[in-house]
Amino acid sequence: MTVTIEKLDNNEVKLNIEIAPEVTSWEYEKACKKLAQRVNVPGFRQGKAPKLILEKYVGIAALQREVLDSLLPTIFEDAVNENNFDLVTAPNVESYEFKDDKTLKIVAKLELKPEVNLCEYKNMEIEIEEFKAADDAVEKELAALQDRFASLKDVEDRKTINTDIVNIDFDGYVDGEEIKGGSAKGYMLDLAHSNFIDGFAQQLVDHGKGEEFKINVKFPENYHDDKLKGKDAEFNIKINGIKEKVLPEINDDLAKRVNPKFNTLDELKEDIRKYSENTVKAENERRTAEKIYDTLFEKIDIKIQDTMINREIQALMGEFKQRVNMQGGNFDEMLEKEGHQKVYDQLKEEAVKRIKTSLIIGKIAQEEKINVTAEDIQGKIGDLAHIYRTTSENIVEEIRKNPNLLNSLNQQVISEKVTKLMVDSAKVSYKK
Image 1 (tube, one colour):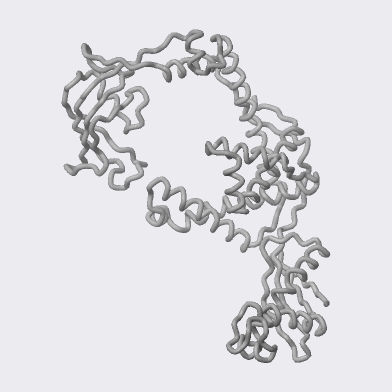
Image 2 (tube, one colour):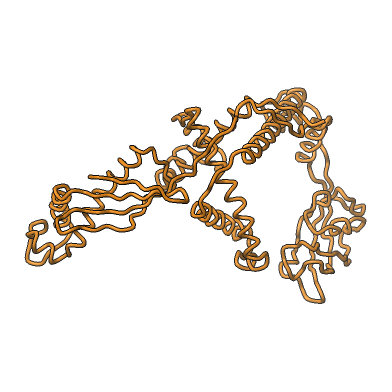
């Protein structure tokens, strides 16, 4: 077998392969025996049809394809290993031909990952905006826990205040027409933490139980429903009931209610402080990593072929469509409204960033000989089991069904290790 390699533009190489007749003849005989076992030739027991009969029945072209399929994996593996090719996708066979003397000629193209010439990625001098916890972070968290563990008490002798929770009936109208999905019966609304339109909850203050009244609000200009954007709306309201929050005291008993592992309030406060410190550390590391990658993007010029970018855009488009649909939107309508070109340009920018990040991480991992261990994967499986509230065994079963999930976990581990390497070695200063 001879293989001639021709370098092309756009990170492609062409393989001109020629396989000698003695090899193809032997493979052809094997193909005949293999195919005979899979097809039923009338008049013959399975696997017993003579070669000439089999050739007439299934066609010589089918047998030659069997020969090709048998030879190609080894041919490509040898070519990739001998030349250290880093493939983006599986090789593409452009043409093949069996000559009269049974010589097999194959023309194939390989798409290679772009070359990455690294700059210095360790001990980088990085300046970021420092993230700091609020001075009263512990007090704010205790107040939030106090609110979370509050009890509710029915109110009969006063009107609503802005910290109450009210049970209401409501129905809304725009231009005299009822708003689709804009009505409810017995809805519990926390006036202090409402996610309704601005002004809605505020207008429910200072009203008594059983009272019926109207309020007026304006939908925001960026509202997700085009029919309601910027529109004035009127809502009919009825107060069915009022409940007030009764906040528990901030003491040892509250600490035990938050988590039985806490015996005292001081233990809870210490846990909050540690969590706050870890949050600050994690955020500053995230900002450092972001700055490092931005710097590398500026310094490292990578020639990424259009085919690679387009595949990544299609992947991003699929993710985008899934998100829109999960949120109850219509992807096609959204695409029409935003404009195809605008969406494409945004996705292209993200695609290039993703590819560059992946290539840089891969190159650094190669330089630093960073590998994924069984313990790394076990850790990731445990994390997924915790997130999805299932068992590690169930996650392993999902990986068996979808091998791409294992590849994704491998990439996550490599990315985290490379990022940690750079962040840990970085010389970080904070902007004044």
